[in-house]
Image 1 (cartoon, each protein chain N blue to C red):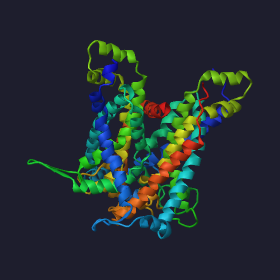
Image 2: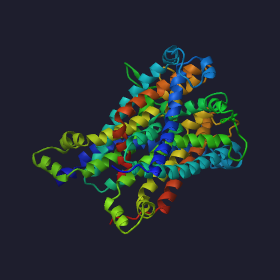
Image 3: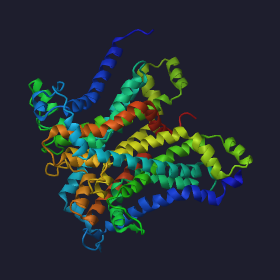
Image 4: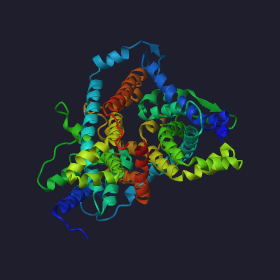
Amino acid sequence: MKKITIPKVIIYIVLTIIAVLYVAPLVWIVLVSFKTNAEVFSNPFGLPKVWQLGNYIFAWTKGKLGIALWNSVFVCVFTLAVSLLLGAMAAFGIARMRFKLSGATLTYFMIGMMVPVHCVLIPLFVMFSKMKITTPLFEIRFTNSLIGIIIPYITFALPMTIFILVGFFRSMPGELFEAACIDGCSIYKIFFSIALPLSKTGIFVTGMMSFVNTWNELLVSMVFISDPEKKTLPVTLTYFVGPYATNYVQMFAAIVIAVIPTIVVYSIFSNQIVEGLTAGAVKG
Amino acid sequence: MNKALRDKKAILFFILPAALLFTLVLFGPILYAGYISLCDWNALSKPKFIGLKNFKALFTKDDVFLTSLKNSIFFMIFSLVTQQIIGLILAAILSGLRYGKNVYKNIIYLPCVLSSAALGLLFSFILKPNMGLNQLLAIFGIQGPNWLMSVNGYIPLTMWVIGVVALWIYVGTTMMLYMAGIAGIDKSLLEAAYIDGAGKTKTFWHVTLPLLKPMARTTISLTCIGSLKFFDLVYNMTQGGPNNKTQTMATWLYFEGFSYFKYGYASAISIVLLIMCLLVTFIINRCISVKDFEN
C-alpha cells in the first residue's frame, strides 16, 4: 500500500472538478427536460416538481424525432454493413495480395482522410439531383432519399476502415494463409472464412468509429434531404429547435433523445471503443 | 500460394468496388468542384466559365469570407494550442494514476462520441442570457455577459466561447491518443532514466516527450483539419451570427451554396478550404520529422 501524499490528493480533486465540468451540462439538460417552461426559470437547478413526460412525447411525435431515430438507425446499419464489407475487401487486397500498385492504392484511399466533405457537397448534389434510376416497378431517386446520403457516408467511412484493417491483415501470420492454400482453399474462401473472422476486433473497432461519425453527421444530410419524414436525427433536431423557439422544455427533451442512444452504446462498450479508436492512430 | 496472391482477377475483385466508389463519389466530384469554382453559376442558370473571378471576389470584395477565414484560422490555432497542452497534461496525469484511470478517461472522452450538433444546441441554451450558466452566476450575484451575442473586438467574446466549447468536446481525442502513445513506450527506457538518476519531471521531459513525437504529429493533424472543417457546432450555436461575425469557412460555404444557391462561388470557398487542409497537412509532415528513437 502506497502512502497517500498531498500532491496525489490535489490531482484527484482537480480531476474530479474536471469530471464534474463534463457531467454537469448533461445532468442539467436531463433535469430541465422534465420541467415546465416556468420551472426552468423559477427553479433552474433543482429536481423537477412533477416529472413532465409530456415533453418527450411531444418531441418524439410532433417533433418527428421518433421517425428521425429510425431513419438514422437505417442509414447507420446500411452504411456500416456496406462500408465494412467493401473496406475489408480492399484492405485485404492491399495488405495481402501481391501487386505493384498496392502502396499507391493505399495512399489513394488515405488522401480521403484529408479531404473535407464540404468540397464534394455541391458537385454531388448537382449530380444526384440529375440522376434517377427508373424501373417499371419503382424509381430510385438520389436526392431526398436515404440512398443519397448512404452513398457518401459509405465513401467517407472507407479511408479509416481500410487504414485500420490493413494493419490487422498485415499482422496476421502468413503461414495461416499458406496452410489454407495448400489444403486447396481459394483466395476468396481464405478471405471470407479465415481472414474476415480473424479480424473481428478490427471490424468491431472500425464499425464503432463509422457508427459514431455516421450517426452524428449533419451537413450532408441537411443538404441532401428536405422531406421531414426522411431526415436523420441531427438534422431533425437542428430544425426542431427553430420553429418552436420559445418552448424550451420540449427542445431539451429532443436534445436528450438525440444523445441517449450514443450514451447507452458508449457506456456498454466504452473500454473497447476507447481502445479501438486509438488502435488505428497508433498503428499509423 | 504466390500464384494465388498474384491472381489479377482476385485483386480486382477485392479492390475494385471500393476504388470505384471512392473515385466516383470523392475524386470525381472534387475535380468537378474545381471546375465549378471557375464558373459563374447559381442553381437556375447554366454554368458560365469566368476563370479565377470567384477567387478574386472572395479575397477582395467579400468581407464575410475574410471574417470566416480569420475565424477558421483562429479556431485552428486556439484548438491546437489548448488541446495540445491540456490534452498532454491530462494524458500524463491519467497515465500515472493507480485508481480511477478509466473512469476519468471515459468521462472526458464521452463528448467526442456524442453528436456535436446536439452538443451545440445544448450549449446554445446553457449560454443563453437568461438560462443555464448565467442563472448559476446569478446565484453568486454575478451578472453574466451575453455569451453568444458579443461581437466587439477583433476576436469577439463569442468566438472564444465557441472555442472553449470545442475544447470541452474534443480535448478527449487528443488526451486519448497521447495516453495510447504513453502506454506504448518501452518501460525499460523509463527505468534506465530513473537508474541514471533522473526524476519524474525530468524523465517526462527528456524521455517520454520526445518519444511522443509521432503521436504529436497525428494529434496536430487531426486537430488542425478538424477545426478547419468546423461546421456543426458553429451552425447550431450561432448560425454564423450575429451579423456574420462568427461565420467559419464551412458555415459560410453552406449559406452561399444552399441558402443563396451560388454554386460557383461556394465551390470556390470549398476549394480554398481544401487547399488549406492539404497545406496544413503538408506543413505538419514537413516540420515534425519523425525519427525512430527505438532502433
